[in-house]
Image (cartoon, rainbow, N blue to C red; front, top):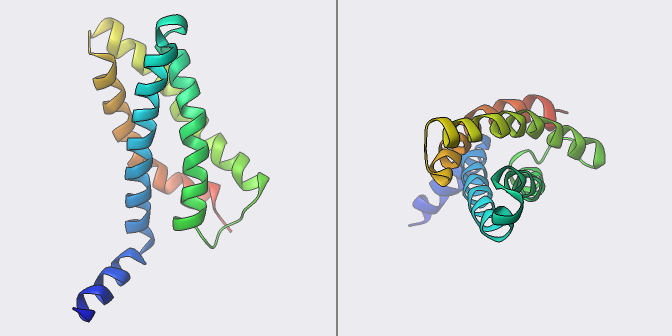
Length: 136
């Protein structure tokens, strides 16, 4: 039993595994934040406004989680936070274009379209955050 816990601890100590765990959580959190915000304000302001608000909330939560559990030896403070958020501008801009295309032109249900886009970002973001947001 002790050996099993030792192996689990070793596995979680690997940065890529921690990234996948935090990134997976954040992807789900961001998706459900979008769902919630869209249900509350989407009928009044549209799903793109919901996307922006949900992104601001989930990216701020993501920063704290990545800083605390994944990139613990990287820089901290407002400068790191600003770099981290600047990384999220690119997928947000792409999402603001892709989501309406998937919904309006390809007639995908909004929540399916958003889930598809969110899943693709998790892989790309590891390299961007490791080499830009939290670099030493």
